[in-house]
Image 1 (cartoon, rainbow, N blue to C red):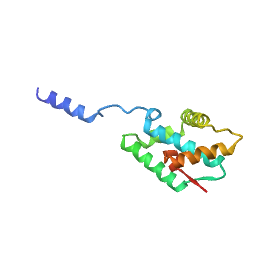
Image 2 (cartoon, one colour; image 1 turned 45 degrees about the vertical axis):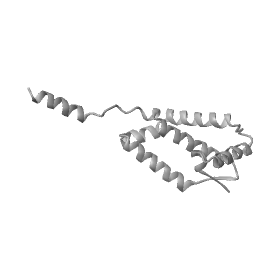
Image 3 (cartoon, helix red, strand yellow; image 1 turned 60 degrees about the vertical axis):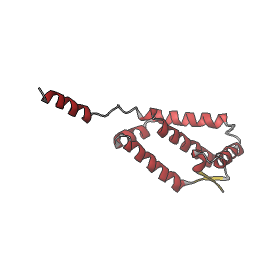
Image 4 (cartoon, rainbow, N blue to C red; image 1 turned 90 degrees about the vertical axis):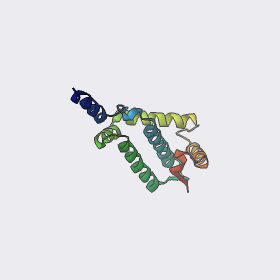
Length: 132
């Protein structure tokens, strides 16, 4: 009879305390990916702002390590990053943010203004950008 409680304890310890939420719902990861997309749009549209490409690459690697440390497998991470619906969602959130901040496709300076503000405020977005 003592084996049953021991087996239950072993089974309990072998399972994760809580199931992982889908990567598409993991706030920290999604917020960073959205910030990266916003920074990318700014650097591609604004002629006076560049991206800190090497820094961004390092941040992307840190984000992947973060996901792995939370228990997500490389396959789960790759599937999330390759997911067209998730990319579309991230891009849409980024575009919405830019629009709310006053970005206009026909006005590159509107992207520059947002970029300068993000850099000055030292946001995650701003940390991925540098003024030329």
